[in-house]
Structure formats: structure tokens, C-alpha cells
Length: 72
Image 1 (cartoon, rainbow, N blue to C red):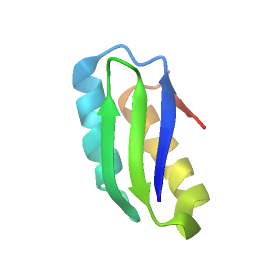
Image 2 (tube, rainbow, N blue to C red):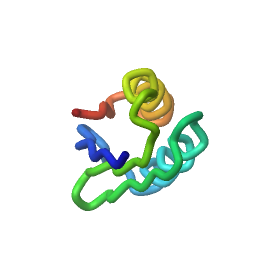
Image 3 (tube, rainbow, N blue to C red):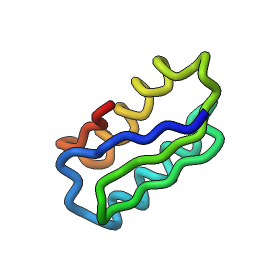
């Protein structure tokens, strides 16, 4: 399934690239793409693992840019 999330407080394009790589490496994430200009994260994921993966995505994003959060 494909899902899109808004990203809050993301200010650095290099950080967005690092976030995209980190999210791509998470279990159950088949594809991840961050569009820095519109502050959007697009992922492909198995539906049954959505809730746990969203938590892991938030952790990965926060490690790179602590003020950044994903908004469902």
C-alpha cells in the first residue's frame, strides 16, 4: 500500500536525503521518497505493518533532525 505523510519542521535538503535513506532501510518499507520542496514523505509498505512502521519512521526521522515529525 502507498501512504503519504507531511513532514513538519524539516529545514535541510541534505537531512531530507539522509532521512529518505534511513526510512528506506526500515523493515517492511518497500520504497520511500521525500520531496523536500513540498515537505512530503511517500512510502510503500505492507498494510499489516503500518502502525509499527510509522513509529519507526518517526524515530529514524527524529534521529536525523530532532524537531522534524511526520503528520498522518
